[in-house]
Image 1 (cartoon, rainbow, N blue to C red):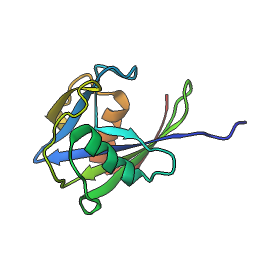
Image 2 (spheres, one colour):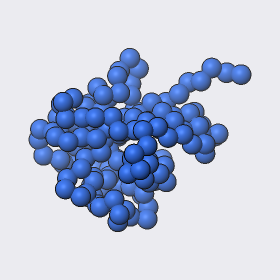
Image 3 (spheres, rainbow, N blue to C red):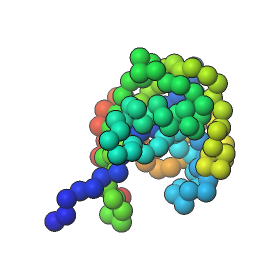
Image 4 (cartoon, rainbow, N blue to C red):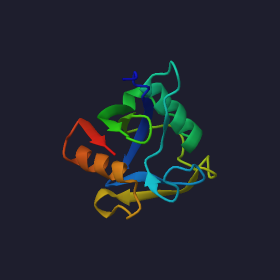
Length: 144
């Protein structure tokens, strides 16, 4: 059996009043045309929180201070046809700057939406994670 070479990613959950921010993916080859949370891969020797901060600045033009961030759940996904994934989902309750789409070639659209009115085309594991967070689950496992 081979040693696992897992792919880590950090996701940001921006919540304002009763809505969260979704991004519609484009030109990536992975769930293009589907909504996800703003996110990015954790680079080698980078901590998940640092990756979140870097990605939110690159994708959305906002600076996220660690004092306004909390880890709300972690997801471990065994993908039978790809490498396994571990995803860190952070609730962001404050930031500096104005949210703008700084990567329109990757994010076709930014959408503020209520959790009880998610679009049909939300990536399935993102929908599951949002439901798990609503249920207070701090760790999720799945096999796809």
